[in-house]
Length: 433
Image (tube, rainbow, N blue to C red; front, side, top):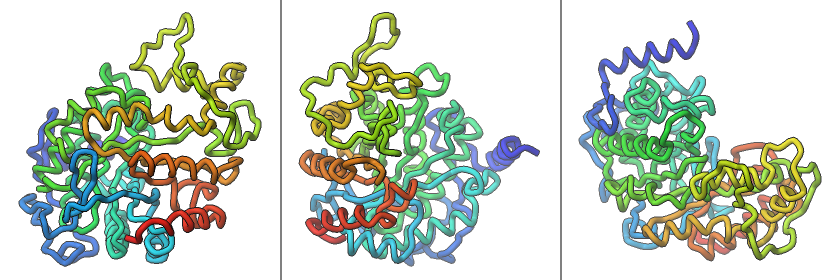
């Protein structure tokens, strides 16, 4: 039997016990599934939940809190989150993060796909993966590193409407996974928050209102975590469509649609541009430019709609930006190249993040740059990353580099001596966790 069909049938069987259909329905009451590493106690030694979701993260559990644009600890002291993206972690890595790099934050991306996904289990997560997650989070907490638990799916699932449709088999299984995680870790210290879906892309589905679909998806999961998992404290980390594109965060709907959880929401955007330079060091014409290019005083060309195009601004800003910078074009024009080069200007970051900063100021919410950085193949890579971190720090933006041990070898910190040295020197100016 094909894997997809098996998952659908398994989900329907499990859904009989854990019904959670309908938009915004938070009545699901799943058990957390088998306990992998903690016996009958939570990871911190506290009693594990019984599946009823009656326990909540409280003052005895170390948590972050939202006060307007500020993130604070339990004592009300401001916390600046500085860190990197992880694909799992071991003791040596956690030690390096905390003691060598002075990073107090990680974005732990969990992959709900392939062998990690088990729709037949009440948790919708395989037993082996649950055990790994337990170990990673316990290890990070032991070094006082704040962990953002952020889940992702495979691209095919993220680009289909079912994941964004409460009541569908896929969404129901995904919600069960989140209820399991929140139930499991609501009593664990140093959980920074729950990242409901890494880089959502409802814009790639046939759904007529991708913003509304994403908000419905986010609200429904927030309700399940709050009600079924019994966690009314831990922050939610969310972002806009188009894979957390900063140019999408002009839309007030992303705030207005989540006001029921005001004071609990952190907004994520990424800085993964210009491509393919950040990945391979190349321009759209195949050349190997270095950062920085000449300063640019006018970036209007990056969002110019040309005659005959059907784009609408600001709604289609990410699409217009990609078109104007030659993204995906086999034969980019000279104008495309001029626009693309502007993205390596030292002033580009201020233009690119103008909308997220305006959104933050208007709605008084925290902002995190959840991914940034470049390959060691990119000319001027460390100057580029230094300028970005300097900008984030000056603008009070929390940040998480891509990656620590995630991504290609050329993007990782421990695998590249120059990058490790750079972040060690940078971290010397920050307090250790």
